Image 1 (cartoon, rainbow, N blue to C red):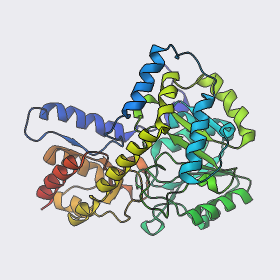
Image 2: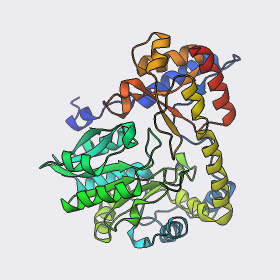
Image 3: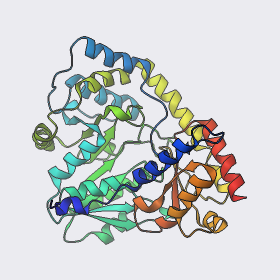
Length: 393
C-alpha cells in the first residue's frame, strides 16, 4: 500500500515512544517496592472538578447529546469571553471564539485556513513537536530557529526579522511553552507581532498553559495586543479535562466563517457532552478549585532547585505550565552515556523514573536536554528526587 508523502513527513512522537517503553517496564515493576514514577507526560494528575463531572452526567441524563453548531455552544463561547474579561481584562467577543475538538483541532483548523503549500512558519527551537507537524500536514514547512537560555528559549523580534524570507507566512509561538515552561515577555511579543504585521503575516500563539502562569510579568494573553492575533487554548491543562478533547481558538472576525466551514466538514462539531460539562468550569466554585490547584502546581514547580543541585541544570526557571527543561550533560557523564535519549532509558532502568529526552523538541542542542514534567504529586516528585540523587551521587 502506498503511503502519502504527507504522512511520511510526520516524524514519530518520541514522547509517546518513551511512554510505551516506560509503561512496559512499569508493568514488570508493579509489585515491587520501587514502582515506576512517571515524570514524562504533560498531563495534570487532577481530574475535572465535581461540578464539571456533574454537568456532564446531567447533559447525558437530559439527552443534551446531539450535534451543536460547528463553532460550539453559544453559551460556552460567552462563558469563555467572560473568563477573558475577568481573568485578563480583555474584551473578546463571543463571536470571535470557536470551540474545537481539543487544541489540536484548533491548530489544524488554523493551519488549513491560513497556510498554502510551500509557506514557511517560523518557530522556536525547542518547541512542541506536534505544532510543527500541523504546519507540515497543511503542506507548509516549519522553520525552527535556535533559541538560548538568555532568550528564555523564545523567539525575539530581531530573530523573526532576520529569518523572514520570501516564503515566510508567519510565526507559531507558545507562551508558556512546552517543553521549557517559559513565556515571552509581553513587550517582546508585541514587537514580534509588529514585525509580522508589517510583512503581512500571521501571529499564531499557543496559549494552552496560559491559566497556569505563576509570574505576574508573564501571565497575559497575546490577545491584548491586537485583534489580528490568533490564540489557541484548551480545557486540558488549567481546566484539567485532558481526555474530554475540548479546546477553542480566538480569531479575527473575518476568519470565523472560514474556520467554521472547515470545522463543519472535518469535525462537524466538538463533543456536545464535553461542552455542557465545560460550562461548569466557569462557576465560582470551580474557578476557586482551579486556583487552589494552580497554587499546588506552583509548589511543584518550586521543586526544580532540587534538580539543579544534582547537576540536572534548569537554565531558566519556568514561569508557567508544569515542565523543567534540564541540561543533563553532567549527569550523562556521570552515567557514562552519550546523550539525553540514552540518559532517559538509563533513568528508567536504574532509578525507575521516566522522563522525556529532548529529541522531540527540535535539533538545537536538544540532545543534551531532558524534559521533566512536574504535573505529578509532590510525594512522587520527592521520591523521584531521592532516587535520582542516589543514582547520580
